[in-house]
Length: 331
Image (cartoon, rainbow, N blue to C red; front, side):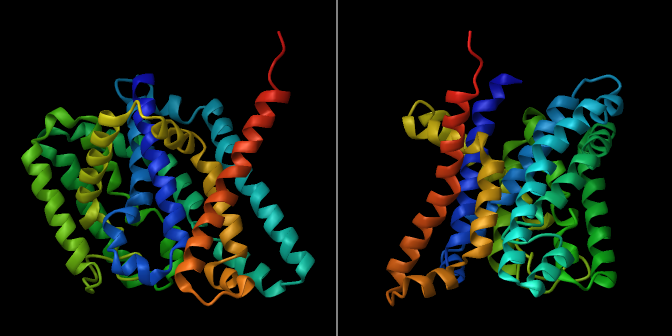
């Protein structure tokens, strides 16, 4: 599995950089640059990688469910994902208690988190639980892509159900339904030699056309209509093509020093993600603009992006240096 790690770390590094841009740039800039087609693919990349690594570890493994749901894996999941979120939530609540913002505390508890991307951990946990079941489905019906078609049907039915019964965007946002079809994308990625490149290319172009022209068209009940129109099953073949494009770039310039920095960001993507969630949750662009008291929107935007990148990445880097210097084993 090690031969995959540099590429995976690069993808995760690019995705977390995309996330920082998505959460620090003004919405008008994101809209005018069609960000949904490029940096807006950050979360699909993350969940595609999650499914890909899960399927890679489950491939040709006997007693698949015993392995996946073992005590060791639950402990690892809790320490790596849940504990950092608990720590983050503690400090968020502590700050809100200190400033006496009771309304925000209630809102935070009601919404299941605070800050950009606070839904992510809830989705990740659902995807982690579902991964072996989805892999079994895709493996069992792999002939002629029947498993992929079956999963597509499941996604359509779930969207229909949500269209009729889920009328709260936040509730929909913490469900993994809109990202479920990425399991099929990861399965195709893992078994790339079994699928025709031209067919994937055509499906990718169709997904891109949908993303550009139809994502804001109300297609309920078949596609849940809300703030997450740009992330649902019709667009994910473009996500696959975009992943292939990034991997192609990586293979051509993997020896460039900058790539090592991107890989480092990928390795530390979860910590960086939580940092930005904390910082931007307290200091969004609007508040930053008020604090700086500057009138030039371009300068404010540049300064805010720099601030978000610095405060999200540098503390993680310092922590790593301190840990390596003072907590490493002495021989």
